[in-house]
Amino acid sequence: MLAGAFLLFAFAAGNDVGTLRIASLHPLLSDMARRLGGEQVEVVDLFPETGDLHEFSPTGESVASAAGSRLLLACGKGVEPYLDSLRQAMGSGVRVVELGADIPDVMVPDSNVVDPHWWNSPANMKRASIVLADALKTLLPQDISEIERRQADYEQSMDTLSRVAALKLSRIPLPKRTLVTSHAAMCHFCAEFRMRPLAAQGVARESGGDTARVAQLLKELRAAGVPTLFAEWREAPQYLEHLAEQVGARVERICMDGVALGIPDYEGMFLRNLQAICNGLAGCGSGERNERAQSK
Ligand SMILES: [Zn+2]
Image (cartoon, rainbow, N blue to C red; front, side, top):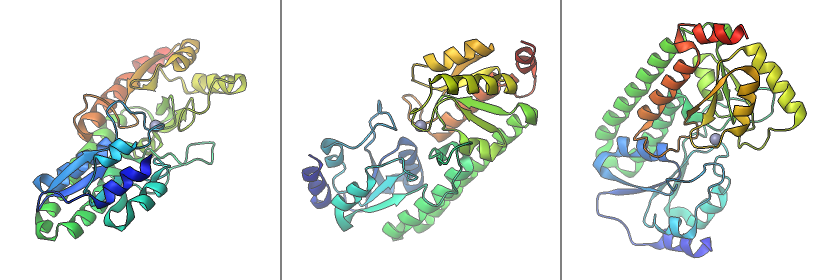
């Protein structure tokens, strides 16, 4: 089904003169491309607004919609298992850039699995913006200085987010900085902000529920004394709620996959997550909820 669409994608007539068409496989990468490319780029989102990051693969229709693109942005780190066949079918006319490819790996604790959700660290987004800017400068040589200026602005925004988050989260005492999530998606965030990630399920929610795992998790949750567990914003968090009930915690929602309706840009998503985490973990300073949970 995809082959015909790929051909269309590869051979379609070009876009408006002077505008670079970019196809993107993740909304946060689309946002970055629009920010760095400005009016010189047209970004086509291949990821549907209601899609699930760990289930998605492009349909013929979505790929055809990106006809004429010269750049395809992907997260890398295995987020897009279909990427090799997509790359092959698209041929040499489209350059595929995996923005997360060179970002240092962060392992999911007690596993041999890499957490692919690198975007949850602003420092990583800064790294990715440098890679994207280089790709844009190659394809838009007449706009190099504009792209460099926008990349510098973007970098500054990411530095600000890093500073704000580091300051807020530093108010949580180190021993209590455990971030419990449904799936293993916040390891990069935790690596940047010196927190301990603890996931109730695997990277793609593939594990969880068996008796031994639940018993182990409950033991760890009680030891950590966390007052709040965090679910992906739109998942049905029954499993997490079950665990929370057992340890006297509650469940809040954050956006870990970077895919959410109504979130306009990276800063919006990150600050909303940060606020939820701060509120959930003792208000980033008061310690009240942690102490209450510990006393149970
Ligand atoms: Zn995920």
